Image 1: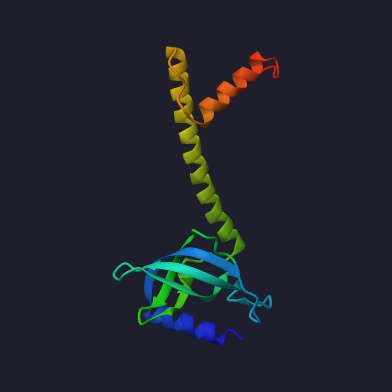
Image 2: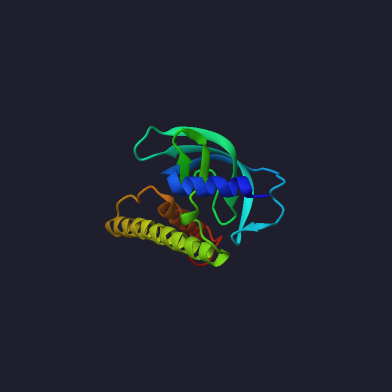
Length: 167
């Protein structure tokens, strides 16, 4: 059942070009392929996708097609995928299997690293905003515009109005 995909994968692993591809749109596609069968212990799903492919040595191109994609790959709009493609026929393209998590635990570890990095970046932004707010408050200057400062001012007004007890 997966023979055409296996042949394409084998061909592109041997002689395909590597590129990054941004997902422009993605919709699950009902397919006879989606039978719950796994390929190399990696569940595959059929998707209708539009990609903007950015090869390192060629012009960027866009392609829309149906692809088999591991269920361990994030296929949301805006995601960036590592792909292998045929430079002579751009519709011959697959997600590079060498970059795909091979298990749910591997996928979770990768997602945890990304989430941790995002949380650290958000905390750094919030700490900088709070430090600026406190500095301005001590100096008696106007509070900077921003989510943290405006929320603190709103909470202070609610406290003064007797609507909350503590900040």
